[in-house]
Amino acid sequence: METSRLVLLLLPVIVIQLALMIFALVDLIRNQYINGPKWMWAIIIVVVNIIGPILYFVIGRRNH
Image (cartoon, rainbow, N blue to C red; front, side):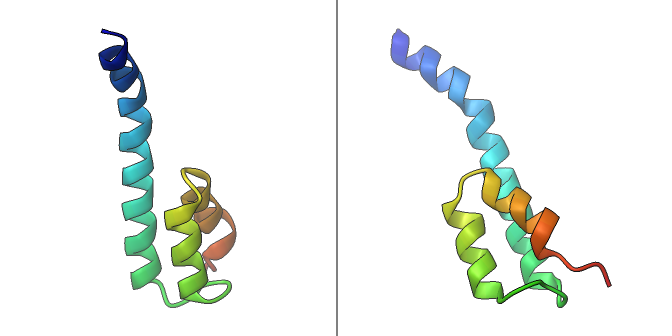
């Protein structure tokens, strides 16, 4: 019973993490103007949970 409760509590966090990661990776692929190399941002987006995609959108993207 406790395991199913834990899964229900973590499910929204997992969905948010996956959505942020996919959205950030798609934007990284499509965007030409990036601060730093794309491979570095791809690693940060995938490895650093939740914070990685947010860092990409705040620091990595260059508005052109």
